[in-house]
Image (tube, rainbow, N blue to C red):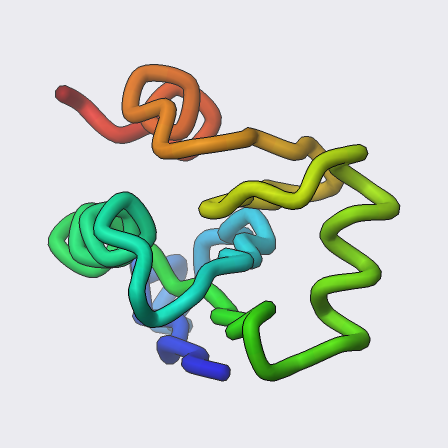
Length: 99
């Protein structure tokens, strides 16, 4: 599992405020090229995410199947919304990424 640190986004009256970033979970396998592309896209846009290798992690795989109703990867969960596959436009929309 990879977790990226939250970064300060603004200063309010001398205090650092953190943007409330959506929770992003990526269900993937190491041999899936779309999974690799998705994770590179998120990293390039400085989006923090938790990564689950569903080829090794049976609990994560069961969670992914229960929520997405399918077994293909990648699956991205953004704050409880499931996106199946690397849907760049939908992911960008939900994460406010300009494409």
